Image 1 (spheres, rainbow, N blue to C red):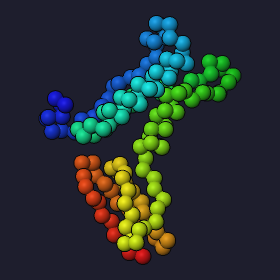
Image 2 (image 1 turned 45 degrees about the vertical axis):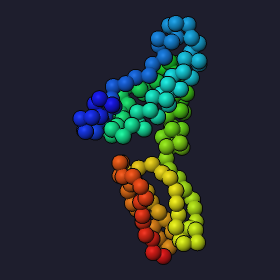
Image 3 (image 1 turned 120 degrees about the vertical axis):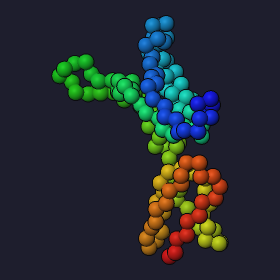
Image 4 (image 1 turned 90 degrees about the vertical axis):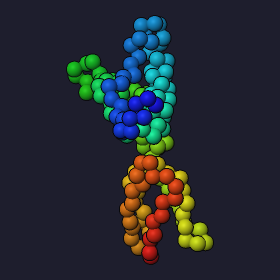
Length: 144
């Protein structure tokens, strides 16, 4: 909140969610990975819900998302719980998808996240953007 008072967009970088400390303390790896995924979800939900946060960058997390086989003859890999949690947040929970018809007045009402939207109708489509910080009712008129 102190940094937000400066009035500039904040970018979150250089954060890591590692399980090493938990496993060193004796927490089983599968439990530590579940704690890691819970922490990431709570942390991202909190910071991305803050109006001053403009972007979030993941650096050096690849090894926390995927485990590759140590056998040089095996090119297999395993997607770890953190991958599945992050993918679920980004592609399911935080992505607005709507398949709806209009009401009697030809209006569709929905709550969504800021970003780019595509509206497809029976005979065409239009695109529009809801900018961050743009509160209230957004109106798009589609003529069919």
